[in-house]
Image 1 (cartoon, rainbow, N blue to C red):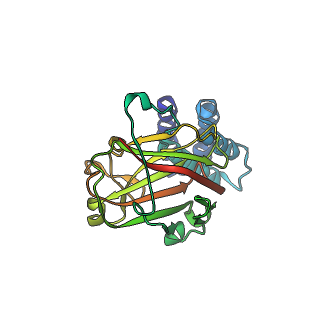
Image 2 (cartoon, rainbow, N blue to C red):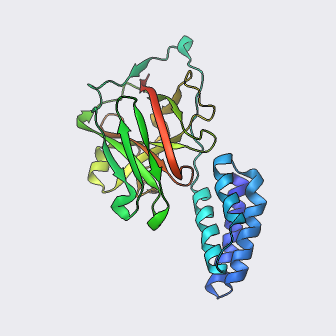
Image 3 (cartoon, one colour):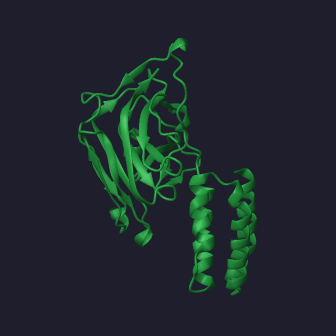
Length: 262
């Protein structure tokens, strides 16, 4: 990914000035050449989206340039997901599954409708499934669930959160785990986020996401440089998100078990 990001940065350093100077065909051409160059280096969930863009027929160079630029921006923001690992019970890891007394039984749904999008999602409590669809219309592309705690949670004794999940399109889809602490309550539209997936779609081994990995606070999806680290002793909200570019269209995320590990 370092090589991919360097190639994209180089392309933008050539293409953006060309676009600003009115040479839009050159910009589109540079972007497409770079896209074809980096395709073999991308993980599958990013490769499929960029491959579709390289094969698309655009109305003009301007449309092409922006389509590639949107793909490049998504790739630059890509975060490798946490995936299942063997449970090290012999090393003393303790799993504490979430119950209805630990987190609310019904989450709040927050979709891109808040910004004009049309994506939709819902929580199916009987099967513990987050299901819906995301759309890129109106610059949208996400659906999320938020479990809001009625009082501040002190999770300082735990190392992180674990999940046993199965989900649709395991080779492509990744999902985000969201956390909020009391700092997020003071700074509008902020949270902490990490990405996870189960690429083999087996649920025997859990996904471990350590609290230490939630290192940088985000505001509207953008990392805040120099922002405070996540405070596990003052947790106010837990959430799940399906978001572009890895989830576009229908999705399902079935949670067989999740909770804290220590």
